[in-house]
Image (cartoon, rainbow, N blue to C red; front, side, top):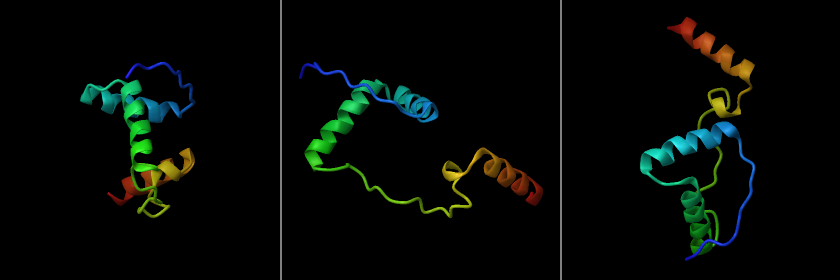
Length: 81
């Protein structure tokens, strides 16, 4: 199928970089990965994976921490060692 539509979106630069690293290892361009994702949405009639809250405690989930919280947590774990 010919690609004829342009999709412009804004994403977190760190998330994009990490995704590009994985996709590069897989040999898949970002545009192909997004095309796969959009196709799966139309085929499944929704998000093609479970959308749930993280299982880690909030105090352990670095994605939800501020920079200061992350640093304090690292220092505490270093002291524990």
